[in-house]
Image 1 (tube, helix red, strand yellow):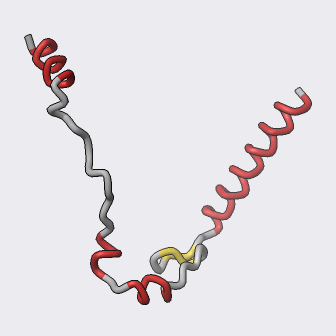
Image 2 (cartoon, one colour):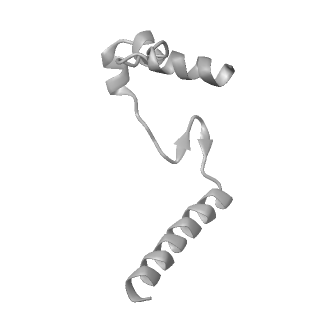
Length: 75
């Protein structure tokens, strides 16, 4: 019975999905000039610096991607 009810609701388009235009809390909270002036430093993310373990994981991911690409190209 629940399955039939769900199918009826889907066919009736009761579940219409999310809004077509998304909203951002940051864009609603600040004026456009503040957002443009914001400096995004990837090494200092929200006050946290990338440590040695993070750098190792980043290099390891690059190495794994390189190994996969070489394996796909040369077999």
